[in-house]
Image 1 (cartoon, rainbow, N blue to C red):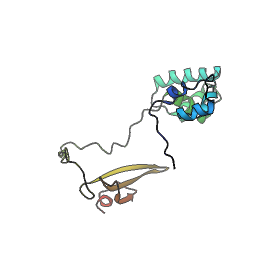
Image 2 (tube, rainbow, N blue to C red; image 1 turned 45 degrees about the vertical axis):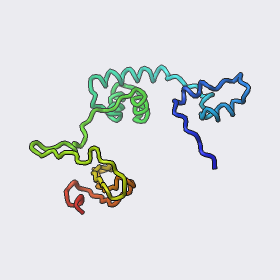
Image 3 (cartoon, rainbow, N blue to C red; image 1 turned 90 degrees about the horizontal axis):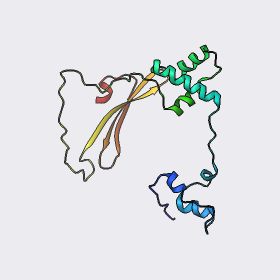
Image 4 (cartoon, rainbow, N blue to C red; image 1 turned 180 degrees about the vertical axis):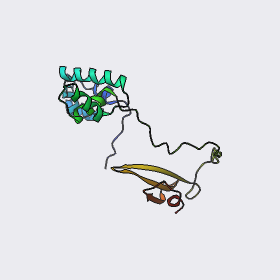
Amino acid sequence: MARKKVISLPVSARRSWVKPDSVYSIRRQCRLAGVPRSGLYYKPVPETNENLLLMRLIDEQYMRHPEFGYPRMADWLLDQGHHVNQKRVARLMQRMGLQAITPGPHTSKPAPGHKVYPYLLRGVEIERVHQAWGTDITYIPMRHGFMYLSAVIDWYSRYVLSWELSNSLDSLFCIA
């Protein structure tokens, strides 16, 4: 089986290599450049005037209230008399690069007075299985709250040695 060569240049640069008046067919040029043919023929549709107006209103309101996500922004636009749904507002906000500023769970903040331990593996080369293990805790957002996942992984093989799932962030499930 032939391995596919990965080209590290961006698709936009590789797409510019394909010329319709070349000796090679478009299909062959696309295959050699590693770009899909459909991308050559795609012409992005510009935003409508109504969407541009909505984007301007969203931007102004976001500057006043950066904590507004797309649900509250959609409600505000409805109150202003614009007939929009949340999916449309979410798409426009995503296109503008806007998202609500909300605080996270702050699970990694150290408490004042806690000792900070030094990193003992600095400069150590991991060369075999079971030489170094790592553990971490992360949260998984659910519809009503969070689940917490604790895992132990072998650094050399990347094998998950153990994992535990809990609906509360107590220390017992980490120890187990």
